[in-house]
Length: 168
Image (tube, rainbow, N blue to C red; front, top):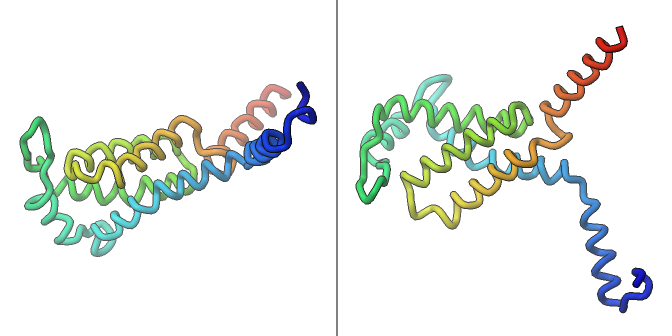
């Protein structure tokens, strides 16, 4: 049975589905990268008082407030000053790489690991925050950065260099 032989409603649904399928995947990939980057970057901004100067509140949180929930126990963060620094640095650097699309899959992996640690610290945030972050990170890791990325430009430049070298 051809599409013109279908009843009107299924034909309209099939056309709409076809139109939606034409939406550029690269724009979806860019939107995922930005959506994942924003909450981490905003959180990272709160951890710094200046260039490489951790805020007192960030250190306090990792020293006094945050606990890892492991096997029914609440365990203090080891090396809280270092953990605050690594968290703050990761929350600034990884989102920037993600938005630029540079080392995209590795940046998404880093944010996935951070999400897992955040889940261990704040277990009640799973449904509203951690699950969507993990899903976005996994999607970026799986589908890559898309064409609107520095990774794509680097790969295209490398492919062009290989073609040029092969023609020499």
